[in-house]
Length: 167
Image (tube, rainbow, N blue to C red; front, side, top):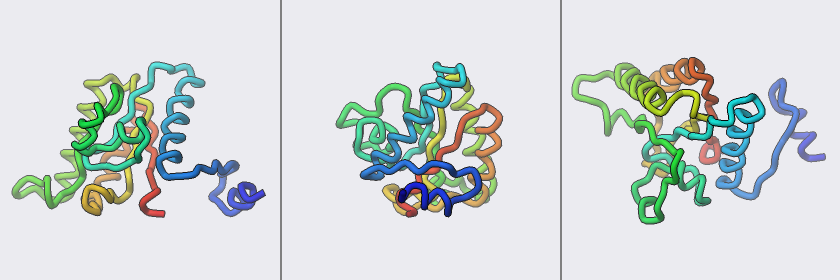
């Protein structure tokens, strides 16, 4: 009954609510759904997931593989099929003289290069936090999401927002 009430207050087209016990479980469920969506649509080879350096997605084996933190190497992670794109932290990673929009465009080009290198037909989705928390409360550079969304659409790669930290 609660799921029905929540769905009734959601945006148009929201027909179902799926409850989980934690953020890790929520993200892992979304990972499974992304892979399943491609399988039922005739593309079972789409298994890889793109996330970003400094991202935090959880503590399960899959979500820790999504997490782009160096300490996960101690656990033998990430597992194969988890890819990490650039961190959108302009202050730390912007080049001298590069504007935020130029930085975002460069990261978008790098993302497209990663997609092409891996094979667009092997990627199930890209997960990103609207604000990266574990990396230092990183608000993406101006124009970042606007720059990457057309690339993801071009290759039919779903964008999955990990909203756990943002509530």
